[in-house]
Image 1: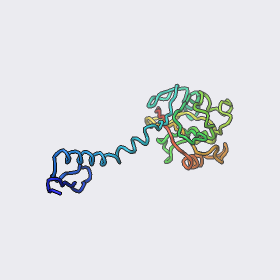
Image 2 (image 1 turned 60 degrees about the horizontal axis):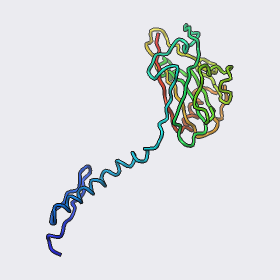
Image 3 (image 1 turned 90 degrees about the vertical axis):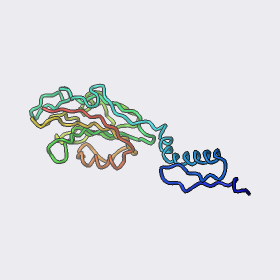
Length: 216
């Protein structure tokens, strides 16, 4: 074999294409360089390809949009607040494969308690449901009979609207829907919010959030 027919590829360095030591035609060197560059890009492209068909899990509402200000109807009645305490309409899409039930929480992380304030806890929502109508947060309404609404930090079950301390600035109210891998959680309507959150996080497949604000 003649020396002019021999070529080799130098050691690859991270983030750089292969460098040819040209003992043969320039065309062969260019081909090898481009092939090596493609190989370097494959690890970066693989995750994009793998997730190309994955649906995004989202939570939305007809009552308000993400980042909006909470309306009087969704405020608490009591503790100095004069709202109507009506839970908003909520709907979600894109639950992952294997979802067997849903859980919903509403939490104010800005409440001056050291652990926030739980405003609504719902679990064992059937997997074939993808929405809650306005007012479903009243357990007496019977709008979600299959689900369990457990105790909030107001000391009762069902939806409790926003009612931050006066002069404390805007608080964030985080509505979160969780897709769970179990049909039911082994809890009841007397279960505290922290206990429900523990089981929810231990069994979640995905979660989506909608956040609104309110201050007085």
